[in-house]
Image 1: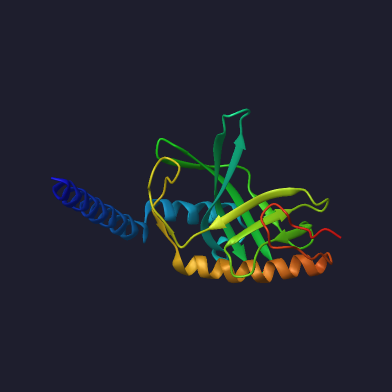
Image 2: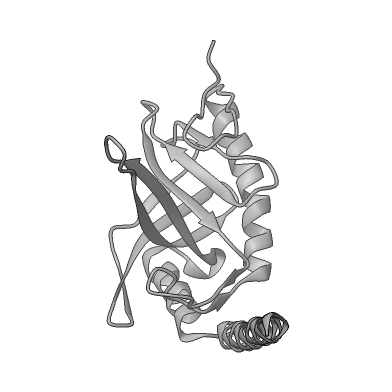
Length: 197
């Protein structure tokens, strides 16, 4: 009797895995030239001068707050979404919001070595935190090569392997340019940009 339940459990797990794999494959295929990907490109084209010169990319940031008291621990996850446009020496970050499947955008932020105090990132990773001239964090972004609609917190199908690779290379160059300009050395740790002296 026990063996029967084990076999049923294994079959259910295999079926769920196959279903999940098929869903991801379909979402990835949809994301190659999806409407959402085109919308991100259109936003970057619209808000940047000479929009064709910028590589457009979808990015996110996720932060988990842990709270509570006594024996109760609560976690709250916050999500932010961005359209990012970049070219050598310049970056635009545009907040995105999703309402009923429609993408809208907020005030674009423009960053150059002159108006950016420092960039904290880890070489080879695809995240960066941007700080103002007083050392206050302005915005953090994280890009991925594959974004699929998993739930309401992951609202887009966007495949962007080439853009992702270009962004990783851009982060390294832009971080060096900004930080050398301001003579700053960063840790490459999220939330802790400067090493203690």
